Image (cartoon, rainbow, N blue to C red; front, top):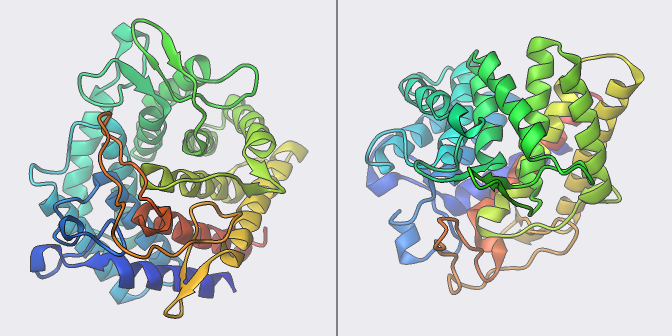
Length: 369
């Protein structure tokens, strides 16, 4: 069942969003809206970090059901990403670069994507060298910023751990736990301005996701008990504050369209990879899997069928809405983020999260969880 639903999510996104970049052979990139504006169709607007998650979702599908077409598609998206970024693999945003590093590392390791190697070398250097001991640790959101946040440090540390930089990844995990964990709820806050120490207190689902993924990665690779304990504490907070009957709540469009999908990806990582056979670890794996399954069931039940393919809602607990046109497309804000479209379901970010969710549900179900 979940494999077929993941197939359907993949097919819907590919048919509505995937196009060659500037008619170049051997390239594919995601048009960020459907229906698309003229700027979107010609990739004048493209969103670096959304495309990184497109690579990751394409890798999910190729891992679930390997085919030559899926491997070829991954290479085409990686090639297009490099071309469209104009200046190389990197940009000025450490969170963007961290997401691309995660996607390229997986694509190379699991699918033999040779194009990824050159990008990984550059991205690893950028992420490792951004550590700021003079500020007490952490890496900034972007080059030259005074804002050090979980959306940069979490994925950067996951990438560095997977690239063998365990000590730095552990330093980053310690920094997040010390500086950004809310002592009242146990949830991870967004970030802190340094050296002033002003904490920004919004709680975003993807901040919880990346820390769950990071601590699980370190638990697997180092065996240190503290990482198991942090997963247990944060998972309990996510269940209490961010779910309703185990369905992840809320959701948005624009950049926010990816937030719940990222949480789900790393809940699946907890379910599938958290080590240990004590009652606490067994329970954590089952709770994480239960949230994934419940959220996927809700999202599938609330989907629209458009030309026999699913369109997922931005809030999995509510019926999806059909975007009637490109009117009200999301735009870049002054802070550098992407705002939601008037109907968030038109945003590729929302549909990527739906695809991510179906792949995660397949993975945990296939493991018998």
